[in-house]
Image (cartoon, rainbow, N blue to C red; front, side, top):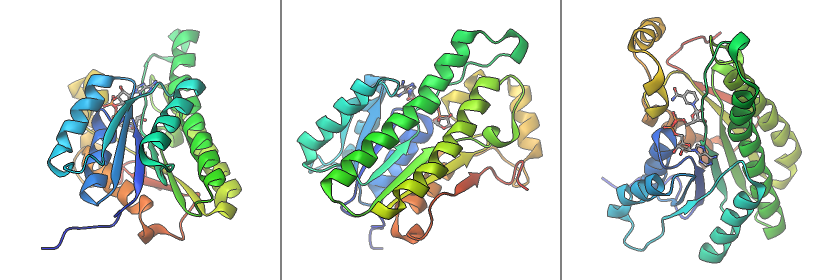
Length: 256
Ligand code: NAD
């Protein structure tokens, strides 16, 4: 069977690439022929993802960098390091760095609200803006920016005021970026996962997970690879006339 090459010779940066959904995106993009930049605040886990790609990294086309997406300086440094190494900006980004700090609204501390907004929303803003500027100034006429939101941003969820607000913000940011960047050939789309089995869900009680699984029309919780497949589609030419959309990857949960 011939190798799949939907992302052949593309350079992609994935924040949160050290774990869960981000790691699965790195693996799928590498399978599709992309050069993958794994970017994460946790250097060890980013390097662990790099090792997972090593079987097809003979030419050292993949790399891992440390980044804190809440810091403009750190995000700009990441893109400078990519430019130094690859002599061009990435034409694909996936913002999968994210955190939760769950608490009911009436108990939620200001600090927990701020931290979740900083990583999930401001981090996505900084990566989107920095990549857009780099693509425009390089004259590259094509790009695909993929931001990982959440179905919770649309429907809310008990104990997740901060998280739901951050993810609703990611959707608004992405739709606006799509309107502004279309003229440069840069597409911007969201993926809205439902409940996906990753380390992020380890804090959710098993009883609650079972309840959610029972509500999913497709009868199971999602895998990180389910979300990665949607990202391949949005990164590839198969979605070349699609921008400003939010693609739900929920097994049908909360849809409609
Ligand atoms: P995860 O905890 O497995 O991975 C998140 C990654 O983000 C980690 O590697 C972490 O080190 C990194 N990260 C955290 N803060 C960072 C920062 N400041 N700078 C750079 N990297 C940072 O979680 P996941 O489930 O893979 O989540 C990935 C994305 O998907 C998140 O945006 C999350 O909100 C979203 N999401 C997850 C689910 C789910 O059910 N797992 C559902 C909807 C949306």
